[in-house]
Length: 291
Image: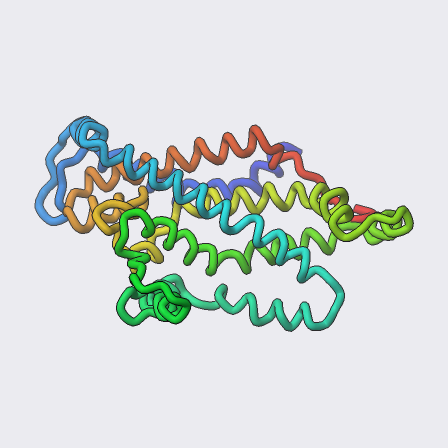
């Protein structure tokens, strides 16, 4: 019965409306206000939108967000794939290794940010101390250089989230039927041929899933970047989420911050639609034997 289906859907629709649609509508309304959050707001029309795009800040934040997405995908996906397939093996030491390796997932972003800000410190950090011991005389300012800050941030993000993506690949690799590997072994296929001809094609849906999570998750990175660089040096790590926070709570301009929030939401929506269209993410099928 159609009415029974609608009754079952109503709780989800109410939840989605309260926590997604209504806040989004309120944010759109705020984009038209000139408001510092304390004094009474005045209606500003589209001036906040015009100001955001005229000063070029939105374009720069969008460019930095895209660069961070690419860096995160390049650093996380291949390493996660290799580690996930390695840990899907049946040897006991791989399980022990996996337990220790997933520890970064237990830490908060703030704790990771503080820890890595000390490790990457050019004066007393562990990384520069190791480089000095290897003969590098000039210390590297990993988080203070405009050319290295975004790369350093992406590597810290990778350290935190590679274990999670490895877990996805480990689960995907365990679903590959053993009969395929046995047939390949009988035909004389070596480890590399088995990986590229069987494991990699069988993990295509996991690769898509991991890519979707990495790309869309990059849009929400704020806390780790705030602790590591606060968007600096200058604006070299000021991605969309950082720009939104800066406009709303540092410049006390709720209207401009709401404009950045809407740009971030629209960017994420377009990205999700493109991923769904070009990867077949919504048409996935289970590859488990017998499923």
